[in-house]
Length: 468
Image (cartoon, rainbow, N blue to C red; front, side):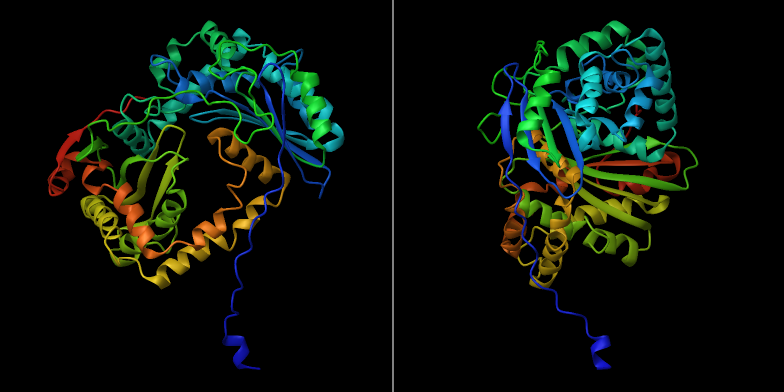
């Protein structure tokens, strides 16, 4: 009996996911309607996935898409900002607008009995934003203030330098907030023109999950969006997902391509910096890559968790950082693999060298042992089912399906696909995806003090100016 207290329980097999069936229909204007029944609590979570995001910003107006999103929720229909907030509060509703690279997502959660009234408010925000000059001046000034603040944060400097260095002139290569210069050039007419063009039912998808049936969702969405006219957006009208698994064709973006900044060290000079911000990154695959499960597991082994190789190396082995992490950011037309860390200023070159070395080692045959892989697989699969417990979580899953045009069994296949991987699969995925020699290295540091150590990496050290 005493011994049992010191014996860890044997974990059972990971729970499999059986994603609930998705009901689909569409409106004549091209808006797809997807819903999932989830009657555990009287709540409905929904989201409108618009088929344009920050990657659609005009080349001379970065930040326009996110500025439009911020303005749309200031005042809409007959309500100013205060009246809009009051209307949502009376319904116990929560509204959020997230402009991502590929899409803009307007999400709403409310009690089931308030769904019709909540959708009235959502419809006003989407279809009848006021875009007043007063709101525009206030929101633009707030945006400029955010950019001034961001320009003083080392981690933000590093992030901007990395995406610019990796993506170059590709639409993914700029920050969502834009720059001070571009925001100052944006006028209220630019905002209205973008909204007319990009906030369109053509190719958009409305998703909902909660204590409501598909018929009610379809009828309420038709009531508030049925006469919404398509602008000149990029989606194809009339194929918003009825009867299919994918929905309308997404907005077209060019495939990502190397920018030419690989194999260089890009340094943002920050005089007197006591520590360095380090980024190591390269182009990665899109979300629809067939190697998705192998890459997710590879990331868990390499730097996606506290016990991963890079963090153990830099934090425990060398004591030059509190933490380092890696991640694959997978989008429609490509993606980014990166490692982020704040490190001792005089050890930035060592940290970069070790990150590249770990990326190379993990691609070698027999580099990953069965026990290490088992632990990584368990960390990914044993808690996976928890991602689908609430209406809000189900809605976020539907947003992913709509954004990346993924098949309905995407989440059902995750646990068995991760569990079926072997060490050779990880080595193959690493060998075909990771390219340490081509990685862009970004360091935010005092260049006057640390130029020579950075040169030991064997790459050109180039000072770059980051525009905010």
